[in-house]
Length: 308
Image 1 (tube, rainbow, N blue to C red):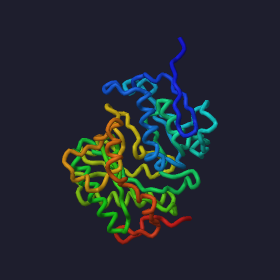
Image 2: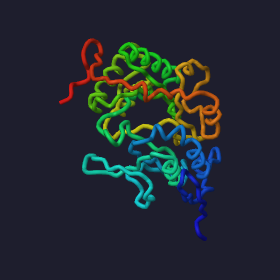
Image 3: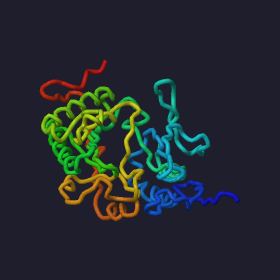
Image 4: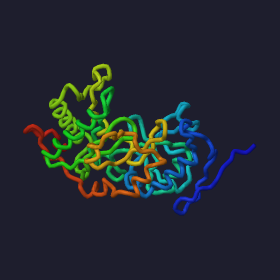
């Protein structure tokens, strides 16, 4: 019997969806067709966070309870209209998908790509990130400790004239992100991020840590700056996460951290549109707020090395 398929209209493209009834999230009965429809509907909000960035696909063709895999290379048989970029990596080159429009986002979803992870830089300046990211991972800590770390980090960044935006990851933690003008390299940005992280931890070492080894974190919130590296990726705004119920990464207003019951995975593909349609975009000024950090000094010493 031939495999069931339907056609999805996205932008000006007709995208083929096979096995639309395949259940990807068994706990909630969410099918592949529902995932595709979510990404089609959310594209207007999500594509600006994807545009120009190489994508790594986190795919689960048989659902999240079966083994999945990361795929960096663009699918061999992807249509010609799926944009690609070839990047240099250790050992050679890889050609990634670049998701610049609704049709490409829908195509990724038809490939059971639940989460499209993206670079922190764009194709025209791959060595220069346009954001500095702090990934606050709760380890075994309560979410209140994550929220507290985010607030203090925001204040620390503000002391140095840097804007900060916050996002629920849809998993367990928060991302605190500084928009950048792309005037510093990954190496420079990573050095600065780590300097800020160490200062943050020094203010409450009982709750927060920069310790990479999980066995040494002792339940503290991990202030992770390692995503600020060439070729590293993060889940962008409105990406679905591989967790029961299909939670979504969501930009937040800072005031929302004061709300009782706030969860990192509190919005799912079935309820996030109520939020999107009832409140302004908390990240609407993200790109316009971009700053250069080449002259930022931390504790009286410049932590961003001069370009060579």
